Image 1 (tube, rainbow, N blue to C red):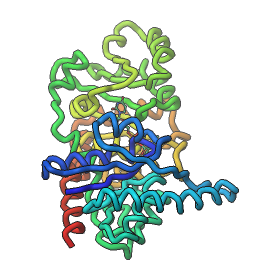
Image 2: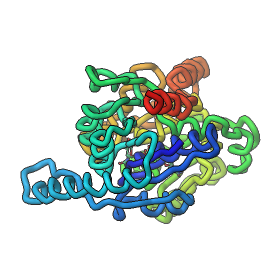
Image 3: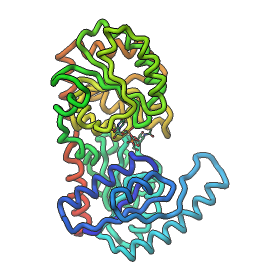
Image 4: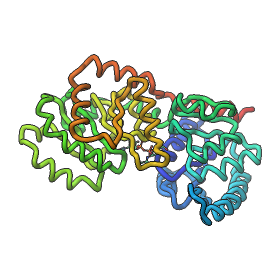
Length: 368
Ligand SMILES: CC(=O)N[C@H]1[C@@H](OP(=O)(O)OP(=O)(O)OC[C@H]2O[C@@H](n3ccc(=O)[nH]c3=O)[C@H](O)[C@@H]2O)O[C@H](CO)[C@@H](O)[C@@H]1O
């Protein structure tokens, strides 16, 4: 299969595209992939690093307020469509897959004008501006959450397929997760992580609650601070009573997230799409604090989706402090039945076969 992938800006759009590409290459070893992104997005570094051919177009996103920049954006969109058509005519793909971010706009639109089958993938409950626009032209739409379906009503071939990053973690080695933390197999621990860059408000609440771990004997706490908050967090952790220090493990970043996540009894996390796909793929109970600093507060509906299913508890950042967080953590960690019910609800939401389902959907439109 010849496949064009496009999507970018943040890892949240890029990794699903790469997971789809990997699935296609596994199923059909002669698969050829071309990734189209922007030179400014993270994709321009991540994609070539993985040895995948990369071409770029020049495009910016719309401002939400009226501005002269929007006129320039329209002009860039038109130019982007022209350049995309050129790249698509040269590469001759069987299908074009867009995973969101404004770079997808001209590429998927150009493909539909050229009659090339197109699929878009949406990671969040509430679709982004680009995917909403493109859904009118796409031959198929894959969504990560069932709650997204009403946003695409009337569109063609809309399937609740899950997020393909879920497929990349599903075979994680739990034992290695414990060993990498220096913990005995089966040690109960809470993993707290504020997204890939850390989250100040979350860290603050964690630092405030940690002294109270004293009333949760045997429970360990793995605290992923984010690079820029690590030193400060370490200094504050130095003030903890000695008997607690051995139960708190601070790290600036986890390179083996799937292994550690699969070993965790409970995760305290932001509600980014990749994190939630990984959490549910592995069936881990969660306490979710959606980031209020993202476009249209889109993490909140993501978190609500898990909370409504009983897989997680949502705490809004405005209500967050050490006491609220500790009460929520200890209520779950002291109640095995509740922990098991949450884990089962989380697992039930998980879609570890997402990449395969999306591949089948692509084959379906490509063969028509
Ligand atoms: C801050 C932001 O704008 N996030 C958005 C971005 O998230 P994106 O999906 O990139 O980010 P998430 O916050 O969900 O995921 C972070 C990723 O980093 C990994 N990780 C994190 C910490 C660590 O120590 N080690 C590690 O490997 C996680 O396992 C996960 O794969 O795009 C998504 C899809 O549009 C949105 O839902 C998110 O709101």
